[in-house]
Length: 397
Image (spheres, rainbow, N blue to C red):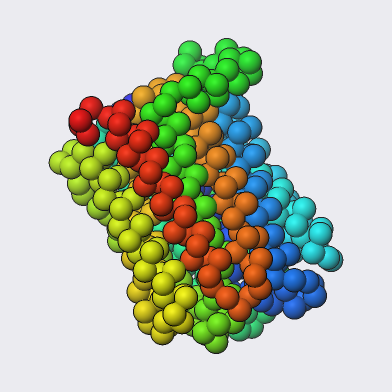
């Protein structure tokens, strides 16, 4: 699909913010998790369950939004999703108890999933090959600002207001995205859409029988499990174990987020010169080493600076891995990009949702569960890469 430079810039920003729904919905109130716990008077695991419910909603929402976008086009499901996101986020502001809050967090995640899955499908509509990898990398760079800015904003909000103000801001962002959707130009022509819902749903078993595609699904699953254990546990690790303030934690989170952003430049710069499969190979190996050292650091109570350095090494390759893996997985899918994107997103978010409460199962004064989950996730991801992805790729033979 031919686009002017101005149109491409607008689309990149629009899709980048859409995919940022996930980190914005979780990262912005990470510094406030201890305050949420105190406000509702509940356990650490129950507070971490609020992240789980958001992630679970995002996982299940993608299964619905992906096929609907293949059936009705990208624009209508995207707009409806943003409207529901606005309502659910307002519900979070007004929630009187933890269980009502959990319900609205699930609804916000379910609705926000439309932005995540449809944004990736739109990228596949307009790009292919090395250009698709480059576009995904740019999306992840734009998206990378979210984990840098979100916790800093959340931490600063706590200086003059309570945690509910965070969700007021998320509501405003939702209004902006809904308005932007109204001027978005449809990228999936009617003649390329699925004929009916049944045809859309039939894509799922077909995709899962593809060993190469399934390998990318599993890789994203295990890596997301590791990444979300970091999101869920890092606030308690730094604030409760290392006595870092909410503002100090948000700055540490921003430093690691900056690394994610800078690492996202690599796929964009190397696309067309270094094969995606080679980029992916190194992106799964480096965090495996980092997570091994990180677990040892937690066990031996390493100094704060060492833990931050090891987390940087473990988390930062995530952006390279995401761009390369999504490009490789969707490059073969054509008009089924919405369903393919939904499956990858659903599986990865589901495992991430399951891992979040496990991080706090031993209490909020130990980091060992977080270290074990991160090492296990990256270890299994490396295994899947060599047995299901590299084994099916002609360049790795």
